[in-house]
Image 1 (cartoon, protein in one colour):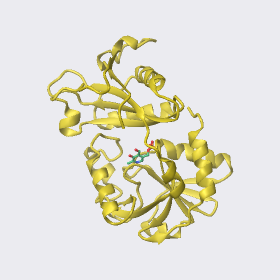
Image 2: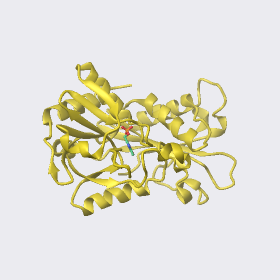
Image 3: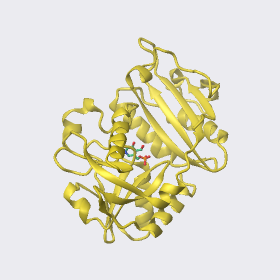
Image 4: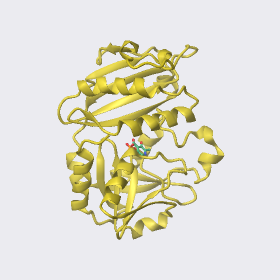
Length: 294
Ligand code: PLP
């Protein structure tokens, strides 16, 4: 995926109250090097990020993504992002997107080693084509994440609820899932509760009740899961946050992995046990997720 657009943001001005932040942005050549070799984002994965889905030049759910960026920054002791400055940077990236689906990334890093400020930038690029996987669904395996449900509270330095740039573990989990013949994974806590996928939230259906793991045990609170819940409750379904034991996975009538760019994909098997894919509801969810949402 080639970057189409890249914008560096000067966070030094972030505290200033103004209406126009255009002069704190520097457009850079998206295909040329732009970061210093001393960048702590590349040396240590020390920073936070967001991926926002864009449909026909409309960035979806900008505010929830900015709220989560601020939450991740807080957990990492990074300066509070200036929402209005980032919103204007997103608007510039949105304008550079083409028709169809794109992805805008927001990155806030610790900056250059011994440097005075964080480094912040925004990119935009065409999204991968997820239409086939949205139709076909994914086979998943459960993988132990190695932490119990209370680890996030007991050891906040693990940054479990932050969307940090350190995704090497999440990528390793996806490779392990593929080694085991699956497409994706569901992380379990070491004390046997369901968490999330390496790059998506999990929603389970039990009859007319939809359940997702409560975002208290160090998982990300997914913006797509929130949207899906809004849609489902609008249709009269019960939607709940719960502590879900791993043993309950086999009782689910249906399951989905949901995330901002791939959107909703049905889970068709968990640990080689088939799960019935609700194709109609999956299509309805994706039609909703592809409609313009703020
Ligand atoms: N959980 C993890 C670990 C993720 O990486 C993501 C998205 O990248 C999600 C959940 C879903 O979040 P969202 O729906 O906001 O994309």
